Image (cartoon, rainbow, N blue to C red; front, top):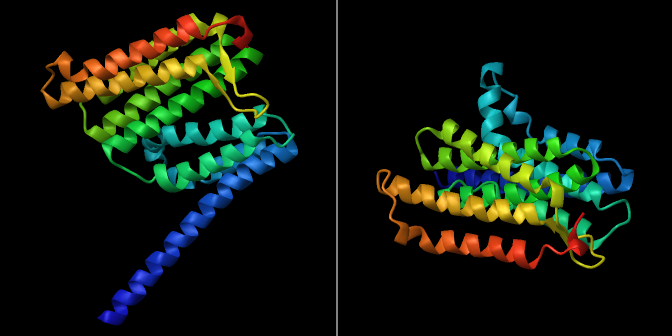
Length: 260
């Protein structure tokens, strides 16, 4: 019996080691190949291959699996696309993206608590909206609106499903529409904040959507905890904090020198 337990633990440890190693390789390879080739296709293919389990079932479950994996897809593709946007010259941001993607794959993504579901959703909104803002400046605002809708839907669905909420699909669609409307209203003055020559950047829209999503999750949690009754005193702090952050960003950090 003792030998069996030892063998079982050894196999689990070995399995965990290879799991971490493969995730590290994915993070390093997807970013590196994007920078080296100057093309994001191969990096995106690696991200897609890493999600093979989504399609390794009967095709009737593909849509369900895609919905449940949207946040992970968004984060993975955002890391690759941000590396692509940073160019083919190695910058600090490329190494930061490698580290960030590794942390996501190894430490954040595997967690399944409601708190971590919220953290995962907020990261997806922040990275996804920044990526969409950069590409929208180079292409068409329709891309930004569509991406914002997807982000709003995916983030809401990710958290609400984890918390066991009712009307998940409907609420997520509404949240997606709200995100899309905000993106449409802001597409004419997209603001990008950069950090010197490091290549690190983040969009104002991404920050606004992230704090709004944070307030939304807090309000929904309060409603769910009290059978649909909202006690504003319990959510006043996160709601007021979110509004204050948005006011500071819009009124204090919207100078033309930041505009992309």
